[in-house]
Image 1: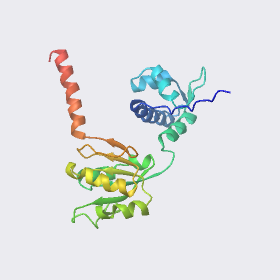
Image 2: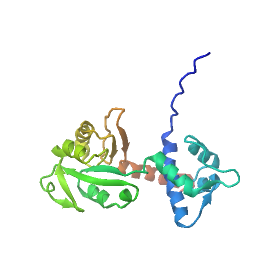
Image 3: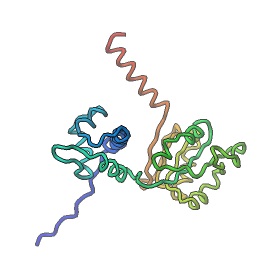
Image 4: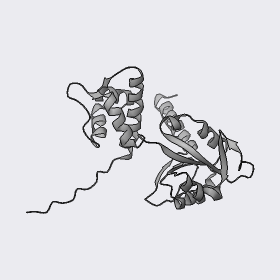
Length: 220
């Protein structure tokens, strides 16, 4: 009998994974409005992609639709949460309690989707020991102890760019599995650590590029 080869894991494109979150937001909105079913055509139209793209994105994870009916929102919504990992609560550390860090701490969307900021860190003597939004700010030297004590797996980084790599290294050494980086710096991390970076100035540059291109194309 021929030996069956071990199947290779499916590589999910980052763009497809990103669209899953957008699908979920739209499904949640439909559910709030009392809608019980939707279709790949409707999902695609709402997000600006084709129905075929919707089916391809969801097809990486299984078959969720019903012929002639489409998708049952009450079934697809929890499936997407399971795929995205938001069907459970995540403990999160926030490092850098400046203006941006404080704004992130006040953002209610994190807790609404299962992300609980349970530990705050900063290096400023003016902030360490104070309470911000009900949470005490700890010194970055306490990262290792607090991460283990609070069973923290994810971290949000909002420190100055020149401090980002050193702080990220501390977080990884403490056992953090994923970092959401708002610092204007590229991080050098091991492949075992998931890493998402948002450079707000860069994103604005991309927006200004699109606007400028449209102005040029229209002759303005």
